[in-house]
Length: 111
Length: 114
View 1 (spheres, helix red, strand yellow):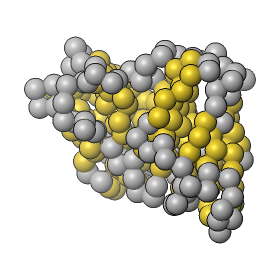
View 2: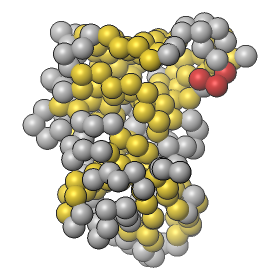
View 3: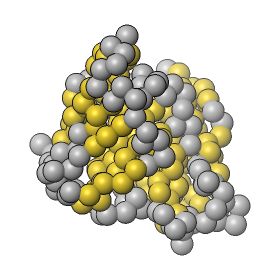
View 4: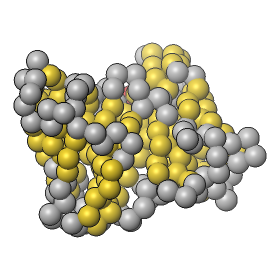
């Protein structure tokens, strides 16, 4: 079954550095979505990128999509301690349009 | 103040008991979803509803039941048939009737079996 798989599982950086997280999926998609989850909280939608788009920006966030490699990346620039959270990608595609989430990347931004 | 709410935040259940988790949204969304999250894991879909009075099983529906009598409400019952119910439960809603739309999540309910 198609599933977004995030890489790395955990990432620790210093405040001000950039953070890059990757997501791979197995089959064709309609869109891919990135979400953030603070510890013990619900998920918050960050960006949705459609299969015919290659790059999308939102503030300090940049998402790329490479459908030939079935992968996406999320770049957070000039990270802040408040960016500390788990980041999930969810892909939706195929015939049943099911949004399937990976296990997430735990990002820790040290002040 | 628009949003999606879940209650209670923490819930404790004795073995053999059924418990019901509440999910309410005032976003006027047609679609609603229930997910389960175990520690260090992603989300797994339990049930979803694309419209009032209709719902479908997700990947792990066994031991769970839902109803969708009102557009705003999508309660989840964890029955005694669910053998390992301790988990974090997340409810979400979406504007459209397909998963491809952005989903808006509630704050979650942490269920613990004593």
